[in-house]
Image (cartoon, rainbow, N blue to C red; front, side, top):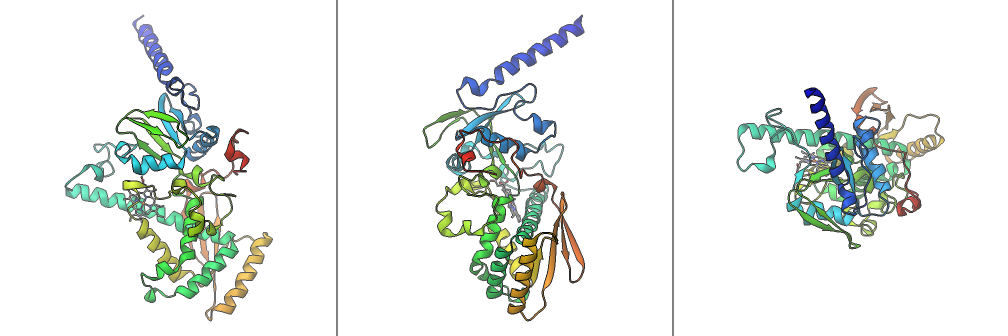
Length: 385
Ligand code: HEM
């Protein structure tokens, strides 16, 4: 009898909690994705049917033109922010209300990753080790993934590849000659890096936690009161691939990042390094790394995607071969990039060396929309992928 009473009381409690929290956004008149028992709006993530990026990308379009909307992670409400101006508000203008990330590692469970440099004034040895680890983890994979994707996109896009080669041949040159000033001369390389980061950012979204109550206001006057503790989702991948800001988002086009074209978009339609006080501290350093890597290593290489059947690739290869012969006295290497579902193979055809970049996280990013935007949605009419 007592067991029955406990089970009944638990079910009743869960039901009441669900009814109370599961209508949180509806009761505040905020557009939202309905909470379905028991996983809320994220069943496909919990059941591992889709990645976080895919599910958030669907939500991005399901919310239509709304600058923000509510979602439920189980029965906990979270705010999903779409509008670049509001993203800027979260990252920069109202930073004091959103300075924490929405995850927590218990220092008792992981004494290294559990330490947060932003909570400490004086660092102990253990904290120094922890922060070094953070820098290593945050800096290593992101840089490797970006490098892999730059090579991948160049292998598929012969004209940008050739334009980049021409610039690098002009700017310079060997490892010994590399100077800091060269970075500013390699403008096209910078655009190639930015366009790659747009299409393949190192993560799909940010999750901040609201650290003090605040009312957010969108440009069209809509308001939402955000309670302390509410998670805030900023869907970077979806914004970067929204045709409202980047027409034909599937096309690799470094020209989107000329100063003139950048000025036509809201600042926070592109935020591969985050933003505000918590922005990636190595933003400039990684730029130097990529530019150093390309300026000194790759201007003698011809990058292809290893496909013999694609006529475009063959044509491109032919064109590049010719151009290369005309422009350099040394012989060209052929670098073949093959995309094997969960990693890239980078093969240097001249000396038969090969490198593999594991890339499961990135390759799980949505490439095809599974849940199309409602007809009323402006971004759908713009032919988003
Ligand atoms: C292409 C390369 C890189 C990309 C795309 C990238 C991207 C990011 C992003 C998106 C964040 C989160 C920012 C935020 O929450 O607002 C971040 C944070 C961070 N990055 Fe990078 N990063 C790169 C390279 C590096 C490198 C090379 C290092 C170190 C040498 C590094 C160190 C860090 C650290 C320590 C943080 C944590 C900042 C914090 O928690 O507030 N990153 N990075």
